[in-house]
Image 1 (cartoon, rainbow over the protein chains, first blue to last red):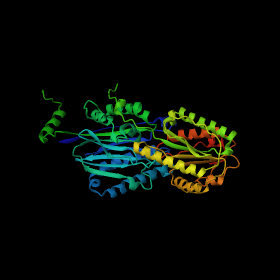
Image 2: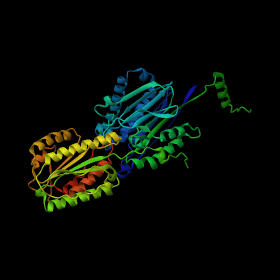
Image 3: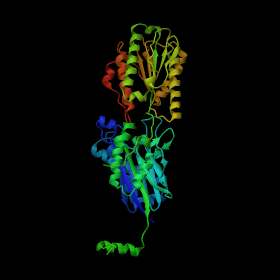
Image 4: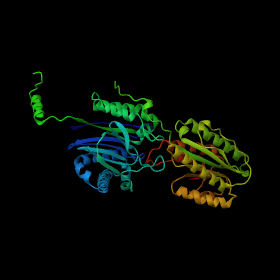
Length: 272
Length: 225
């Protein structure tokens, strides 16, 4: 069986960002390379003036790096992975801060990611937001948000104690056939805090992804419009989600694959 | 037209993050006359402003403790839509320490209730307003130790406010930060500023440095916060 990946992500501006003329500081990103797929999401820190740039840099770096180095990271000690990821992100952000002549803190963001290759996954999370996984389509929490005691406190990639708060998860996919990353704005609508349970919408997202009639573009448009029309009513913050579906198709024997390629070249269909 | 639509029933309904606020107000005999009248008007205006703002209506969680004849919890924490603003009367001494200890306990209990119910919350706010010096010195010293530690540990947002020339600014400042002096009887301006500040905090997100309205402070203060 050959794994097939489908991703869809979206982020929308929160009402307080629109009111205060602040850009959307949530960023989502995907990378597919070397038989690896990685999705990432970052939520730029509230009043940090360049946090959307920091979120952009962090999501892109981590996704590209994991696609490039999955096998090494999978077998590596997690402490070493944390050290490499944080120091690389800090280096990139420092370079950007020097270019723009602002302090490193201005690029602060949370970071969430999931990478999949050959039946294994690696996930990482610092700060608020949530990582969920789908076990045969049923959503479960893989990584809870880490806030301070108070509502407006969390941890960022630029925090002094970041290495103590970046959590790495690794394992075999087994029955996992999807992942969802959400920012804290979306978390307000996708997680029931008193029941400590993921909301029904998480299952709905999975069904959208699973339906082969729904292209990536169609799901992304739906995510954007639903985030905007519903999620931003429950929070003033930006809202974002990033989804990954893993499905499997039968792999054809080599000679049939070759035959199909030849047919494709000469535009021959089975009816002649 | 995209047919992939979510409905309200698909989403979690979480309560708005709360800002617990305790107003600790001096109602001793020296507040009699214009000061208590202006204080009553100011608190009424504060409650109305909180109720009118679509964010603070759901996030501000207010209690009021007065100290004069006795220390009394005049208003219990709860939904502002169901709260009735009390009217204060002046009389008695200035048991400031006992009032501060009471307010810290109320705030702490409220936080435990939030935690039990899965309600997110911001740092608690404590506003102490007095026109005199404390008359319960032992309790005041105990309150100073507890409140200043909470303030220094960033577990409390504190606003110590002196009213008039007889306010013990030194004692008020010992609670953790330099006390501000109200300009005359500008309670209205102070409470207007306070409600706006609650509104700013209620809309803040993680990592945000909250800047309170500096120009607004100038409208009610002679010695700044």
